[in-house]
Amino acid sequence: MKTKTVHIGNKVIGGGNPILIQSMTNTRTEDVKATVEQIHRLERAGCEIIRCTIPSMESALAIREIKKQISIPFVADIHFDYKMAIAAIENGADKIRINPGNIGGRDKVAAVVKAAKERGIPIRIGVNSGSLEKEIVEKHGGVTAKGLVESALDKVEMIEGMGYDNLVISIKSSDVLMCIKAHEILAKETDYPLHVGITEAGTVCSGNVKSGVGLGVILYQGIGDTIRVSLTGDPVEEIKSAKLILRSLGLRKGGIEVVSCPTCGRTKIDLIGLAGQVEQMVADIPLDIKVAVMGCAVNGPGEAKEADIGIAGGIGEGLLIKKGQIIKKVPEEQLLSVLREELLHWS
Image (cartoon, rainbow, N blue to C red; front, side, top):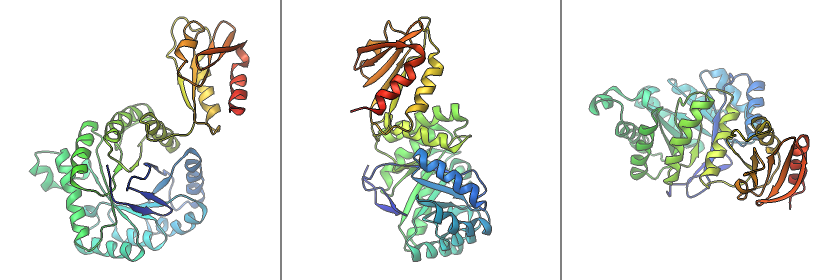
């Protein structure tokens, strides 16, 4: 869906621009060294916007030094203290994330908006299902998709009334169906860029399932300008998952896609280990192709025919396959190295 264009540092979202991947550090932001190291890891994985919590003046002051050492936009995440938002803006944040309902009265929100307006810094209005206003919960008979949307649009109207519309909206819930419904409603009510995610999704396993389902449905409808896969774990895993979701929906190209069979009684090799090794091996190879890893030589060539290249295991040996055609037979222990050699000389 067509949304307004918003500049976040050296990135542009909305207006039909590609959906960007975002993550959040889990370091203490005032620990500049640790925070920068984690951001660099995330950048290498494919993170395009980074968000850091700013709970103290020390962390706000650290933004200036962090910004000198990273190349992606820095978003300051603020809760409760409007002074932290102003300090984050003054120290170089490229965007701030606030919930206007929890940083004080209208005068405090106005002070934050004034600082953002002076520097042209976008504000992301973030509303979560766990922080809905009591009156909205009572009005809708509980936490609902309509309530989430109403809360977000109330905040938008407040800031627009202060003469500022450089905004991004985020409405999140850990309830997948509620989150989907809320985005469907919101997308019809506004043309501001939307940051999409399933909040508190869970561990790498459960969080990936919930995020894949929720983000998949939302993005498939053309809704969303930036995304985050929220996982309890290493934030690098969030980037890997986000890239796979976008690629699976045809919203992003680039990078090798690895497909592998689920194993069965015909499998004569350590397919689980081999597939994991292949996935790690191809991470640094800049090709836009599909690689298949199959467990047996019986169905392997046929199942891998839609892949550009693949390997299939046998008893102590395996097959190298291109477009479903067997190219050669190699010893099992050489499958990985033969595949890598083919990929490094791909044309």
